[in-house]
Image (cartoon, rainbow, N blue to C red):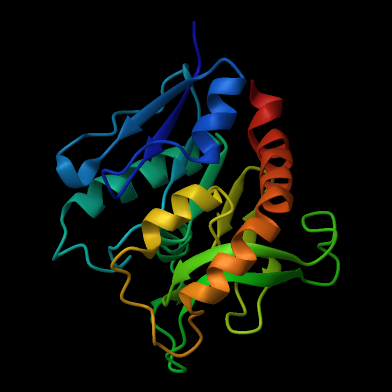
Length: 231
């Protein structure tokens, strides 16, 4: 039986990110679902190796405005109960935190991270991030840590950049899955330009090519650790 990784997406852009690359490189099936377009997520069956909840434009708490989020929360709960590897990225991390009773939303400082920002491990979490690295960011919301979560990383503007629950559940505020070429698509029409904390396009165009290889290497090793043992 071929194993699949269920990918929950909040947009309809190209599926050329590093998650898909890792899944395909390891002979797995990238099973993409888009609940915002009406896709259902089903149940955690024996062929589901793990799941990734991607970032997007939706607020974690807006279940009345966007009822499809309830299907995603049902899936997150089922995945956590089943004990499969779970990765939440940006909105996905906020949703895991919200599902587990923590606050998620826009912080009072009003800052945006849009571009490439240094992220540093919390003391004792150097196993997760051995040295500070620049990661792709595209957000102005954040989250509190869920009860029982291990705080893993921070940036200068946002204290909570990564957490772990147990050995198989991770939330990442940053977009290490996004390569520089994909980020260039995000630059078009982005509303964060000019907001406090956001980098200019000129800054991004300088930093992006410089940091992309290190970000790629870190993320692929991270995917090996999280999903590789279950292959």
